[in-house]
Length: 357
Image (cartoon, rainbow, N blue to C red; front, top):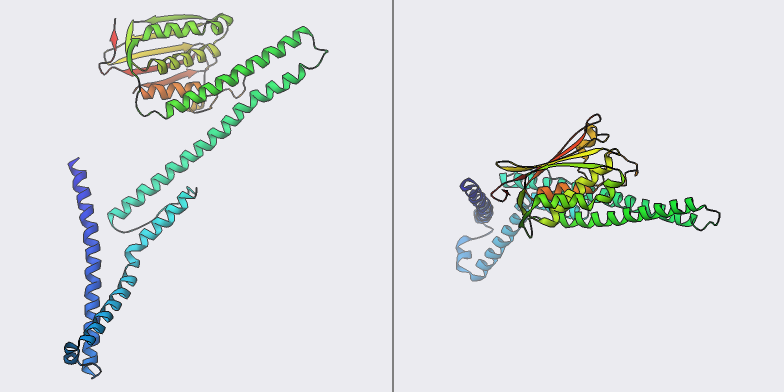
C-alpha cells in the first residue's frame, strides 16, 4: 500500500517536472533568440539597445516580439509532449465508435507506458464483452425461436380434421412442452440477468440448508417420478447464512440436470457434509457422462453438450448455478466420464456462517 502511494506521488512529481521543464525551455529559448536578435541588430547598426531602453514604444514592440517568439516556440515544442495525447484522443474516439480492435503503441515516460497498457487491456476487455454480448443475443434468438417455430408448426397441424385422437393429443403435448420450455428460458434469462448484475450478496439470512435441498427434491417430484428415479441423500443437518432464494435455484438446477440425464429406474446420489472450513455438497448421476471438452464449457451461457433438444435444456441452468455459488464465495466443479456418469461438487466457505446440528 505504501509502495503504491509512493509510486503515485513520484508519478505526479515526474509530470509536474516535465511540464515545468518544457516551460523553462520555452522561456530560455525565447530569451536567447531575442537577445541574439538584439545583439546582431546592435552589432550591424540596425538596432540601438540604448535607444530601445529609452523609448517606451520600443519596449512595447520588444515585448510583443518576445511574446510572438515565445508563442511560435510553444506551438512547435508542444507538438512533442502533445503527440501521445493526440494519439490517445484518436484511439479513444475510435473505441467509442465501436471499434474494439484499436490499440496504442506509445513510448515515453513510465506514466504514458502504464496508460498504454491499461488502455489496451480495457479495449481487449470491451472487445471480449461485446463478443459475449453478440453471442448471447444470437444464442438467445436461436433458443427463443426454436420452440416458437415448433409450437406454430404443430398448432397448424391441429387444424386438420383427419387427425386421430392419439395424434391430436401428441401434438397438444408437444405444444405444452415447448411452451413450458419457452417459459423456462425466459425465467432463466431473467434469473441470469439478476445474478450477473449483483456484485455483493443481498438479503442474506440463516436458514436450514438441508431442509431446503429436501424441498427442492420434492418440488421436482413430477419429473423424477415419471422416470422412476430415486434419490439417496446422505446429509448432516446444516444451517447456512446466505441468500435463500438464490441458493434454492442452485439446487433446483443441479437436481433437474441430474434427473434429465439419469437413465430410467436409476438412482441419484446426493451428499451434504459440514467440514471444518467448508460445507460440501455433491450430486452424482449415472447418465451418459461428458467428455473433457464439454466439461470445459459446461458453465458457459447456452452451452449444451448435447446439441439436440431431446433433453429440453437451454444451456443456462448450470451457468446460473455457477454464478450464484461464486456470489456466495464458493466454488463448483464437475467431474465426469462416459462410463461412470457425472458428479457436481459445491464448496461453500465457512467464515463463521455455517453451523451443523
